[in-house]
Length: 112
Image 1: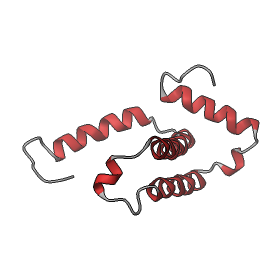
Image 2 (image 1 turned 180 degrees about the vertical axis):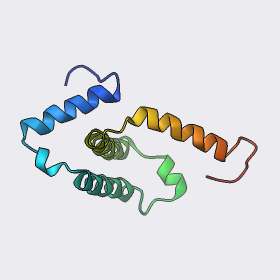
Image 3 (image 1 turned 90 degrees about the vertical axis):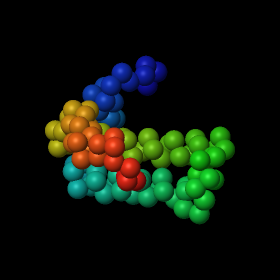
C-alpha cells in the first residue's frame, strides 16, 4: 500500500482485496462488521477512559499514534460495512450534514 488512497472507494476496494486474499468473505456479514466496529470503538474509548477533559486534548505522541490506529480500525470496519450494504458513505454523510444543519441552525446555542 505505497500509494495513498484518494477516496473511500479506493479504500473499500483495497479492503475487499485484503479480505478476499484471506477468504474472510463469509465472516464479513453486516452484523459481524457492525459488531467489530463497536468493539474497535470501545478500544478507541479505552484510551480516554480515565483522562480528564484537558488530558484528552493533550495526548503525547505515543498516545496519539495508538488513538490514530484505533480510529483507523473504526474507519476500516465502517467502510467494509458500507460496502456490504451498498451504502455510499460520502453521499450519505453529506446528506446527514444537511439534515443536521436544518435541525441545528447556527443561532442554536445548545451543545450537540
